[in-house]
Image (cartoon, rainbow, N blue to C red; front, side, top):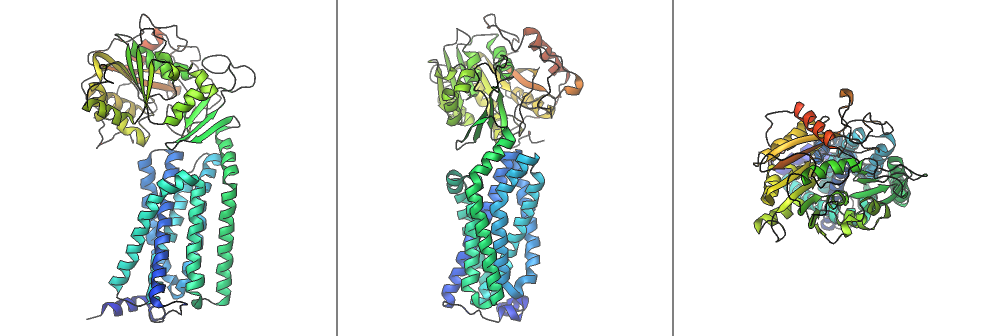
Length: 578
């Protein structure tokens, strides 16, 4: 029978496991220091993983896909790194020092590199896979080398050594996972947070090797590692100092020189360009050199003043027809633009806006360009703004009594991000529409922005099927529309339209779009307990973006392209990630 310690010694080879390290401290303290470095390195490694997932989600969208790509590639690469580290065990101290220096540099600079690829080359997927591979290989190489080092401090059976090492590793991962959202992101941001993590990684790895295991190093190796770590720390420090101008330059590359507002609200990054010329946007001709306002949320264009009036008129006014509209609920719509259209009806008595991000609401109220575009709608005394998640708010309303204590709503306007964005899928679920239906008056109407009906037809018709699954009758319709700025994701955007191309349907209200340009549509679904009347209300104001004829054309066009038989999307089975 082979003793566990003998088995482990044989696996490592006599030069690694049988030769004790010459340490400057007692073996017990040395072992504790090694485990402390394991803890720190594990925390840094998990921060690198989370940072890649978060940044990829922000730049590319679809957090489920991005998390799956990053984590699966990194786990695979960790296995490759563990195999490659077998060749370094004969010089475990030098190997570990080199691995940590490389990991600190690659992991610390990964956020800046990914953002640079996105800003100047227009895509970051290949860089994401490359960094996931590199970081995974380096993380995977840590464990065999640390196992060798800890055995050289004080030999113990293989099971005990593995248990100690993995305990420190898992606790470090817990700390790193909590530090990323609660410490690094709010206090440093993604770019500086990754650089700070790299610096901590370099200091921990370099200190362990250059001080605790200095007896294992030749003078040449000692000076080489010292120089490498100094260079890595200098590069990371330079990155920290240049992070702000780098981010400004990258933002200029993405949004252009007109970017005038850039804030991180805690929910998302909000960027606004243009909007300083009173004559630009809202359907008016541009005057002077001012650019029309554009509002980006997490890199996705949400509002373009050139076209938003058509979008919001098509969204709001069909829902205001066919019945009373004294009490209106807006889900999302923190920019105040849907509320602007609702308040054009004199019979509206109250509007409740449920918006997740208070930063967007604050900008809608105070920014000169955006408040001018929404006509100061959120400051109207009839408007009440609630800061809450729309799903949770509807659930709380249903648990007590519908509405805000004054009865159900005549109209519910769902002005939310596209279902193609993973964070929004629950807001397009069967459960969500069931909650919305409970707050709807018997003769009330619900209208939903459902994404591009041609470019993402499966997703659009899944929204419509999901609404029908809660017992509501639907009228799907579409309107030709496009965004005039670069969009980093699918939100309110359909197809790779050149930013400077004029749509063939440029005349207000026109619905004719060539089949080859079918991607440039906004898609909506109007719903009610009974077949909803579709059109414009008798008291509808004069509209510049849509006409009755355009709406009817949009209804007929959507009906022609219907995809029947689609299942509903639920919380447990979301169907918008196709």
